[in-house]
Length: 329
Ligand code: PMV
Image (cartoon, rainbow, N blue to C red; front, side):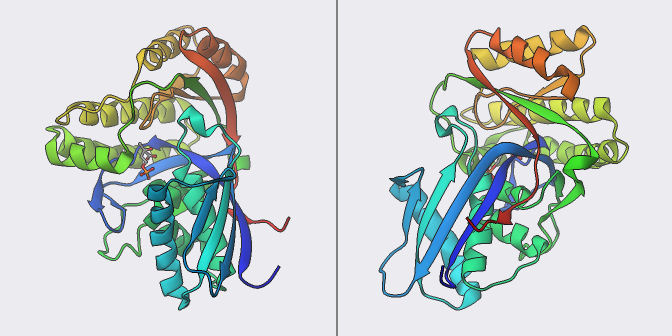
């Protein structure tokens, strides 16, 4: 391998306190902080090779040429890295997700985290974790939280240049054995992209300001719950943060409804399990997949419940994973 090649790996992450609203669109600065779990096995592996003499960046996802819109987004991100490194080399990028992309699970977080690490390494830049997280954020806000492992907090930051808006780990994977079970449902109506949804919600939802206020409060409380290893409190905040985020989006004009029937059935089934004494809490992102936060002893019961929910086609078991890293093979 010459000096301009690099390969990196990063996991997806799941927000328990959601990020949904930007204070700066161009820099992907959040209007409120968020808290997330970095999840294995959901993994993206990205190889990048910068070369002089090639005309444009070439981007492949799972072996096939990426759609033009996604390629352009990757190129814009690489322009930032090239600017930092003083290079005008174009790149060939090959990225692979080991989780089903058709399942509607967000791969932009793991994707831009792996790309941030691989591209900076390949151009000889050596960034610390905070700077890498702030850089990954430029590709996709939530990617800031896939640079870090375990349980992470991404603060909104105060500076206009975004230099203080990055994620950091507040608990390592071995410090708390949290589990997540993802329910994969048949994709419903075409989803609205997260940036478009956030902007529409900010501009038109009567609940947006209240949502942002509650998110900052939820972040403080969730951080305390993590520090105290208070699972019930963390679970309650997880559910209410997801519901408040979706309520704000549903109230936008026109309203954005990410759920399908299976999503809602799963929410009710999770609450029924909880009434039977199991510590299980749901959350959901910009898509129809219900995701369940739980403890190791409840994973099998959660999987059985999800598979018994009409419309859920499969489940994926996850646990806390480490942050983005370079790999040599
Ligand atoms: O960073 P984006 O554009 O993928 O936005 C992520 C938004 C949510 O997944 C809905 C919430 C979150 O905090 O991950």
